[in-house]
Amino acid sequence: MKIKSFLGGFDKNFSYLVWCETTRRAGIIDAAVESTEILEYIESKNLILEKLFVTHSHFDHVKYMDEFIREFPEIQICSYTSPEEEFGDNFRGLTHHEIIPIGSELFTIFHTPGHYPDSICLWNKKENCVFTGDTMFVGRTGRTIGVKSNISHLYSSIYETLLNLPPQTIIYSGHHYGFKKSITLKENVRLSSFFQCNSEAEFIQVMEQFENNRRKG
Image (cartoon, rainbow, N blue to C red; front, top):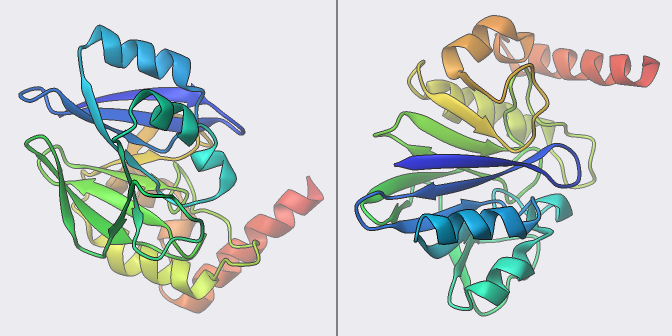
C-alpha cells in the first residue's frame, strides 16, 4: 500500500490518499484539505478513486467532500454506521471490526468514540499503520470538551483498542499537532502521559491538566 499525506484545511488538518499498487484502486481518508492538489496527484498516478473515509463528521474533516463527489460521482462515502451527519446516497456504513478493501489492501475498522460519537480508526495490518482521525495525535489524544464528547468513551477507545495494537504500528492522525507528522505507537506511549495512565481516573486527571494549561496559555 502507498500513502500520500496532504496538509492544510481548517487547522493543520491531514487528508491521506491511500492506494493499492496492483489495482490502482484508491481511497481518501478525510476530505479535510482543498481537493485540487489531491486530484492532480490522483490523475498523475492514474489512480481510481473509489472510497472516501470519514474518521468522524466534524465539519473540518468533511469540508471538501463535495469536491471529490463532483469529480467521482460514484465514490463511496464510508463512515461509522450511525453517523452524526447525513452523507447522501453514496453512504456506506461501517461497523466495529469490519474489514473493508481498497483493491487488494485491507483495512480493519475500529469504532473509537470519545472525541465524537462516530469516530473511527482504520488499521492496515500488513503495513503496520493506523489512521486515527482525532482519537489519537502525536503526543496526546483528541479533546473531549465538545457537547457530544465523552471522556469515558475516549479512555476505552484508547486503552482497550488502540493501545492493544502492535507497538511498532505507525500513527497517522487527523491533525499535525505534534513535533512530527507520524509516530510509532511505542514512541507515543513512551513520550506522553496521556498513554501511561493506570486507570480512567488518572486519564481524566491528565486530560483536565491539559485543558487547564490551555486556558492559562
